[in-house]
Structure formats: structure tokens, C-alpha cells
Length: 280
Image (tube, rainbow, N blue to C red; front, top):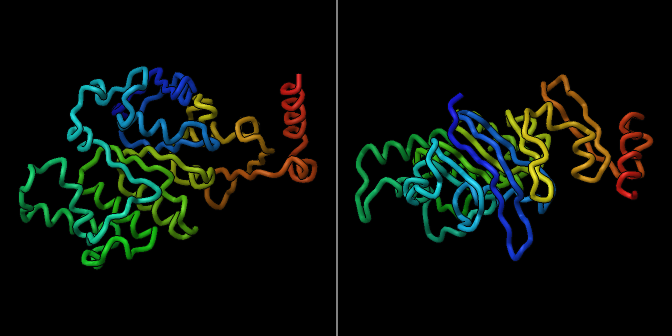
């Protein structure tokens, strides 16, 4: 697959506290990458470095073999589209107008929309199932609908890489799957942070596991969601079930007090060895 993004030895610190430490990975066209890890692992900070929102990171990030820092802001906006978990208040804007904001990287100031622009906006709304909601006010929509509007904006933006920061965090189960099904169906490159490991397993083809600013593992879902690995990172016993009904692994975490009743003996032994190593 064609390489879009190359990240080499990226580090970022704040007041001498290391937030990201020597992170390296590549992003190929069509990847759906889930960035997972505990709170404070550096997931959102990594996204912000990829979007060049921080200016003092070290290392190298190349977009199509050209340094990220050599791109102008409007050029980056033509490549990256960001969907955040809590959309900032967009006062008195209708759905159509929010989606229209995706045209901004391509428009001169005060330029009028042409018929092709209007058609693209309506096509994007149709693709996310909101064609009949163009005249509604954004702030009156549900959380799932707001996420779909922002994804429609990204489609109008013609982004090559869709970046999502915890897109399902405040949604119920139905909307979590609805949003991620939609994202997967877009057939574009996706990089997202996500807390729910089972959602990540279902919708991502690759996972980056971060812990304390370090990249612990970059691999397929099957290789990253290893119980021993997840136990070490999250600090809880983990059990994996290769669920036949959905074709992807499912992981479950338990309090350490329950480990003898729910965790296989081999993993129980590994947990004991890990605790002994930590105390030595």
C-alpha cells in the first residue's frame, strides 16, 4: 500500500515531563489505525503532533515524503480532517453551514459557493444519512448526529486522512457502532484514539498501544490484543476470547481479586511473575 505518513522518533515534553518518547510508525493509504492505551499514555498528544498543533516536538513527520513543517496550514487542512469527541459550540449555525466549513481550505475569503460546492455538501450529508437535516441547528442534534455532521464536513474537505479523537466516548452503544461503521465505509485513511478495545478490534486493521508516552506495540489487532501485554500496560488481569460470532478477538478485564476464578492458570502464573518483578 502507498505510504502517506511517516513518523520517526517523535518526542514531546512539557516542563521537562516526557509526554511522548521516541515514537515511530508509518501510515499507509487505507489504514484504519486505532491508538489505544491508558489515560495519560499520550494518545491525544500524538494526534496533535501529527496535525502540527504543537510546535516544539522533536523528530520527523513526513507527509508524502515531505516534512510536515514545510506545509502551509491550508495545505494540511486539505489532507487532515479532525473530528473531536466534544465538538466546540457552533452557535446559530445550521447543519448545512457546518458542513460547508469543509470548503474553507479551498476558498478565497468571501468567495461564493458554486453549484458543484452545493452538490458536494448535499452528497456528503446524504452519505452520513442527514440529507433531511440540512436546515436543523447543529446544537439541537444528538451527540451521534453531531459526529455524523462533522464527518460530512470532513468529506466536503476532501481529507486524505480522517483523524478522530475518542469519537465514541460519549455515545451509547448503538451510536458507537453507527459512527464507526460509517467511518469504515468511507474507505479513506483513518487514525483515531479509542478507549474501548473491543470497538477498536472490530473496526481497526491496526493498533498502536501506548503507555507512559512509549509505543509498546504497533501491529495487527490479533498481535496487539494479547492478554499478557494488556495486563502489563493496564495493570489489570485480562482474558481474551476469540469470538466466533464476530470474527475478531474480545478482551475482558477483571479485578485482581477475581483472577483465580476467571483467568486461565497460565495467565495467572504470568501475573504472579509480573508482580514479583515489580516488587524486586
